[in-house]
Length: 312
Image 1 (cartoon, rainbow, N blue to C red):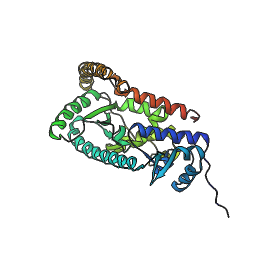
Image 2: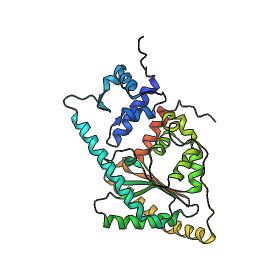
Image 3: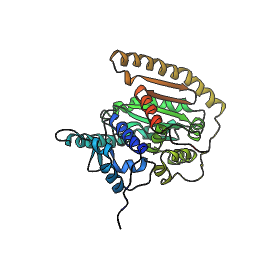
Image 4: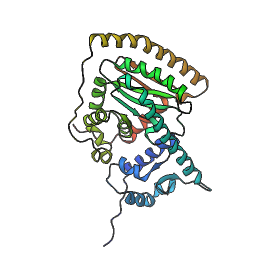
């Protein structure tokens, strides 16, 4: 009996190209194993590898080296794999530093601490920072964050080999529940799937259970995970004193971070690093940094995956 081969649709080939470019922006490669998690079709690694090799457009641009999708280039291509190996080792090292830093964050009351950004994707060749995604108790974000910022400075002194710590996305529980419950874009969905939790597995699991819409973009990655079930995250109300302290720290520390961001953006613009210029969302219940590079990538994801229909 003749074997049935997987035929890739035009939308799937566009998605593969997007996922490759997304990894490339971080100075990394994407593996066939990772692709099987992120495509709409359910397929094995062997079936996908054969389909890529038999697709005229993909085969003209890419070739498989080991488990990785690499671009066809004249001459030896070993450098791509060497760079990828270095990138993944650095990401692993960053995770070790993140675990150590999390020990200093215990008094901060963060309910969840996770590595995000290129480190969570298993690639850290171009990013110099260790990006963190944290969830604070409701009404206490700025107390938790202020302690975290102080400890990040301490950590840089006691661990000189560690990368700079960046609280790139911090939310309190209420904002996190609202964000994950509402349908977000496909890049947000992938970021959530790739997050490497260091502390607060129950919090992350509950948030992901609220975000069942992620399965509309990445059914294999979501439905074959541990996220099925009923959310169990509970939110405690802050006391009057905690609420007042949070407002005070938001007014002072938040203003400082806004000013610091403005000055840094001017330096980046002057150095002609336009893609690194970033926007800052700074409110009582969340602090989120997004570079122009990230915003551009978010738009690209939405363009390619726009055909995905979100059903209520």
